[in-house]
Length: 318
Figure 1 (cartoon, rainbow, N blue to C red):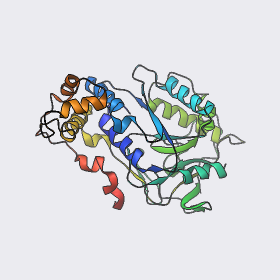
Figure 2: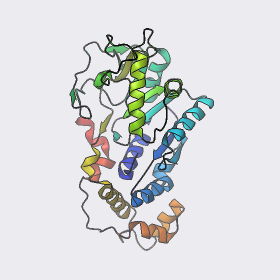
Figure 3: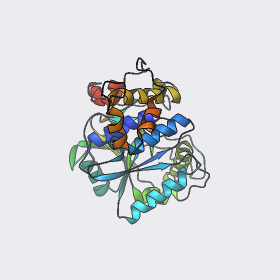
Figure 4: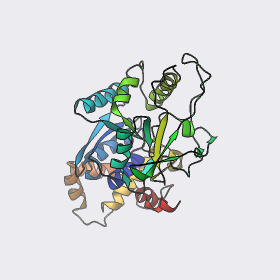
């Protein structure tokens, strides 16, 4: 998450609400150039909604100072040492609106070694990929997973005429090897394939680009190191929102502060003790709470309704 604490807040709320069947250990890698966004990420780190889980934990990692890839690598290695086998790569553009049986998704990776990932952002209805401006319908041969009728497997396509040392256009859409929106992958694969990537890799975009090129080359070796199948659910589980819809970083941050002001009764509706109660929840001083919302106009109107952002269940029928 980068300069988008509002979207991060909404994403984490939906993750806690809709990922079921597993214990979550969440690592949030954040970076911010906007000073107010830094302050908002610090709020989220202290806010019970985004800092505590019933089972599991939430860890916040500031990767603003070119520390993203080293921090990411340390976390992956630590998870491996602790005996964890799978990782969900998640972008703050994703909002879960329907329960995701994560245990069933992990069963695919456990029982089907030929499946490289489980894409939570894909389902047979998806046929357009805006980031690539690509129209790409679901593969004709989607096969049901015997262990769960709601999970489907398919074989990705790629250019078999090119050698591994040759550069090719990036595999996109249903043929993408790895996507960072919402993808389950084995930790051993992240360790193995990412260990060959050379720094500097200071942003997710740089890591994504280099990883995609490297994975494509390993896939096109004579004896491919990349399994050629992927899996997804049979119906939508999440929606992705265009960050541009919220305006620039300052505008989106203002919307988050407005939400805090209204929802915590700091606009006067919560009584005289609202600020002290909220400060106690955060572990902040009352003055720090008031400083956070001091520039917010109660009459402010966000560019996008926060109702749909914070209650993504409205997207189930879309």
